[in-house]
Image (cartoon, rainbow over all chains, first blue to last red; front, top):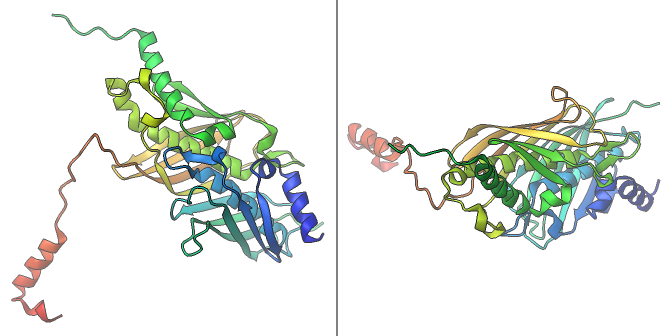
Length: 139
Length: 198
């Protein structure tokens, strides 16, 4: 499957991703980059307009899953086992959040993924994530 | 000998429910996900109302892991804020009659959250309850559990740390802590001031 087709299939099939207007930036072997444009529906603190940590979790989870699917050991199916997210700072309101996830190791049944989220300030990440995902056995 | 009579039940309920509604409605993201809260006394249960937009795996189908994580995080944060507010609601310091989103206290900020996925979330309503394991002035540790049909069969759980919003109204003095610098000074004096060259 070529990249463009993968992007379309993934976002199109996963209702929660299309509902949130997530978009793909790029994918490669065992990694994926996705973006979440700023949207007032995701605001967690109405006084500042900062988006809710939960919206970031949804983006992180989606991007980590996409990295697993693009790993040579992945065979078209995955589910999250565990996901830890550290919120380093508040995302700047109005800016798109982009995530790069890397599947840095995979066994026959488990994929290990790390991800980093940024807004326009590329210096300090907004959040980092570490997750484990299932890998479906080769059939 | 006029002991204060307890307030009528409707008054108590109305005040608590109005405060809860104002708190929940002040966060746009809870509306986007479709989360409401049931209240029994001070105990809250988050309800994630199912809609197709929460699906993450269309083939099973199953709830999106991110939506599940977000539901747990929202329930933890609202429960934390609620327990923080409870005393003020009960004392009448918060007036729900004139309560709007602008008067609400700041929400706790998530420092970190670890989500444990136990089974796939079915395409139907989900429930969650938070247990505040520790709530200090600045930091709080919260555990939250989510289930669907059966309370004992959790489909996800999470533990998170939160930074509490600064409380302007109440100023609790810092607990007595040993002043480490004073101790160091004392120590260097007792050593005959030999440490001054470093």
